[in-house]
Image 1 (tube, rainbow, N blue to C red):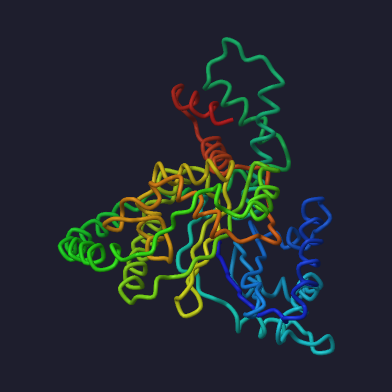
Image 2 (image 1 turned 90 degrees about the vertical axis):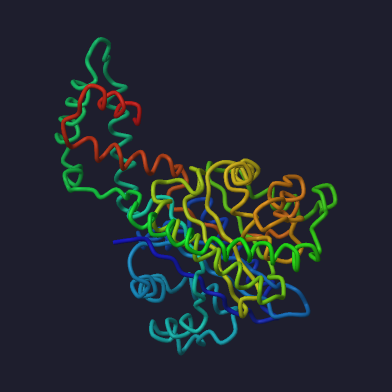
Length: 412
């Protein structure tokens, strides 16, 4: 079973937007205080969020639902529209066209949501092929091993012997029979990467000509983002910052508009094709562009490709998260977001932009949108924890050399 994702954007009844915000704030409070159980009871949802966008008098407000989950979309909807329908009824009765109380059935709810599903443009998963139950069980395994190791003195005992005793202790527990089941850890697809490199080399002359064309005929005419953090509205900044850093994990939601040009659309779509190939073939071991803090991230082009939503679930602070992106993949951020309206000044698609840290961070805050509800199934785990726990399980099974046993103990 692999992870899946879904994005749903539904119109909100204009006179119900305030009531919906109040309802969502209550749900988010219940999640943070441990009272909201429906999402957890499905046992398939890793992360979920609701975000209200277009909340202005001159337009129809919309509710965005983002879910990262295990299994098929049909199974997800079956659970949300049947077993946990109360939660969704509380939320979506504020939206246009949602079935009235007497006409709400699992089928009518699923038919409603099917109208508003938006295809994800690119999705990154930090721990591919790890289901939610697997992540939680491997967390419990690691905690058991940690407690077992801490309970004894191991001075002078070889690492191999410690590894053997840990394995014996684990298998002596009745709740860890599942550890013996083989676990598949993703690895880089070098064949796929080789084909991707060959394609890039084949199209390199065209790519270079395209970059020059974009620079001289588009970038030099762009309206650039020139505000600094001190120029932004302080009340909105405080709203974002008040919802951050309560846990090890954080989230980010962003809404930007495309530059009105067919050339820009072709450019960004080509970059997303490239990004999806890298995500599938190369970024499968817990790091995106060298950044080891992202659980799930996605880009969604919608509104006839005129706008882009970006969502991320990550470890650490907002500032550190974006600084890592700038340091390790500023060219990737610049390549994609330079095709959106009012971005910091870019040259040749891949330079400037995100590397102008002061303006880029201000631009990121300026284009951020409030996340009304955010749910994480394992807020105590970093993505590094998740991947390390899988390695612990995998390396627990077979005999290890002394050197490998030392490395194993460092994972605990």
